[in-house]
Amino acid sequence: MSLPGVSGATSYPLSGNLSALGDSLLTERDYVDALMVYRLELGNDDVPKASVYINMGKAFFYLQEQDSALFYYKQAAEWALSNNKDELLGMAYFNQGSVYTTQGDYAEGIAYTRKALQTFKQIGKEYVVAQAFFNLALLYKKNALFDEAIINLDSALQRFEKNDKDKIGLAKIFQLLGNIYREQDEDSLSLEYHQRALQLKEEIGDQRGLFASYNDIGNTYLKLYDYQQALNYYQRALQAEDTFFVSTTLDNIGETYFRIKDYSQAEQYWQQSLSLRERIGDKHGVAATLTELGELYVETENWQRAEEFLKQGGDLARQNDYKEIWLSNYQSLSKLYERTGRFREALNHSRMASELREEIYNQTREKILQRMKISLRLRDFENQNQVLMEEAQLNRLQVEQERSEKRWIWTTLAIIVIGALWIILLSLRNARWQKARSREIQHRTKNFLQTLANLYDFQSRGLNDPEAKALVMESEGRVNAMLLIHNSLSGLSNRVEMSAYLQRLVKAIKDSFAPALQHTDLQFSIEELYMDADQATPLALIVNELVTNSFKYGLPGLELPALKVALTTQGKKELLLEITDNGGEGKRKAFRQDSYGLRMVHVFARQLGGNFKLHFNAGETRAEVRLKIGTAP
Image (cartoon, rainbow, N blue to C red):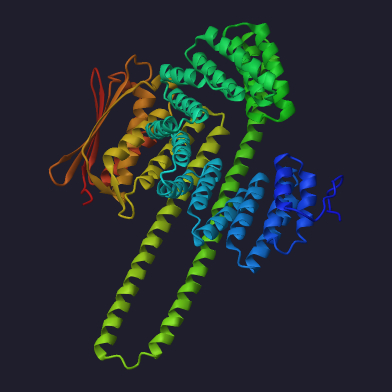
């Protein structure tokens, strides 16, 4: 008996527990023989064929023959569907999702994982449902669909909490949430969730998990420029026994010392990381560390070693198509050649860096198209579910109609009561439809603004003219200000809580400027009030323009830059917005009163029934906007 695509397998008799034998061979990584055993088991009518097909799919999956694996998983799904074996159907869908994900087709991977999730929901497999939600969250995060990832993590969280408070599952969720919020620049939330994950891992004695949390917390502190705290957590992570993990942590410590210009310590830790990565065969890590050391030697003017390490790292990056490392390598070599007077070579590497940057940009654009495909596939899946729900509703209505025909002898009073209940039901359904419609509009608007912000971002990367690039980045900042409005809406009420929103907006603007301004002292004096989104949006754009001007013209060069944002009510009908920086009289020369941004401030202030003034003093510059505007109830 032969199996297409498989040769050199041992023959096994049709006796004994073949499933156990096949599983044992899979565990021993003897995939070809495992396939032959499962093929023999197809002749056993006492064993569900879907189970055998799934096992055969696993063997092909481990053999990296994804098309064959997908074929058998589909066979399993067809058999399970025909024989009403829902649990096997869910497993078949789940494994199909894994194959599509491995092939890079994330849209289909997510769609089939969701099918598996729905199937497991129907049969009450809550723990498996929780795992499916978690896997979906991982897929969404990988594709930078953070909102969807958080929604699925919340669903997984609810089920893990019901399951005797599964601390392992909860810790995984909190750690992933911490990483998502760090990528979204929500650093305080990132630290909060990482600390919760850390506490759970300490309770259950998960040593490996503890070291991962230490490293993640260190990464968040590094992003916050709190280098001492970052080093404290990285040092804890060094106690891990996993060599790959330790090499990564050593690299992180080296980067931290490099940022604070302690080049001696940075070199020491990067050399240790390089040694470990070479020992375990981590080519990506070796290429990255060689490039980092080359950049360090450029900064310390050790030209010979810099060129030696950069060329080694660049060769390895090119051979393995590590484009991000390759690009960094070209940029460092260009800097090296420029500083040593080898201008022709510097120009050549600068040109190659530009070409590679364009290639990376095109790949990033492909990733955005992949995300769009995922969103469209998700919408198709939701539409299919809606059709099924409508069919089920229609069936229920038909059954109700048949019963109603048999109850013709009811009294008039009973008929009136039923009629009243029916009217109430229709009202509730209409209310639900209105809420769903409102939520869809908000979601579409938010997606449009996010896409627009991404387009501005990509456009700015491709521009070399500083003035043109600045204009595009200013437009991107305005779109992000409006996007924050939609992220801050309170449910479906169309209201924005201004204190939290304005603080997030100002911190986001600060994070977009150079590291020299990251220690700016931000002060807020904002009353707790809610505003409708259509009123909050022009106010947000006013704040965006004025705060951006402070960071561009008023704060650079100051030893202790400071910015204060105040929003207070003046009576019942007026708000006073004040934005003050300590840029002083010198800022007047840099300001163009007729600039596009300041003209926008005047326009939006008039739109809100108010006015805008600038006050220049010796020690500060204060922007004052008075608005005749009402707050949301």
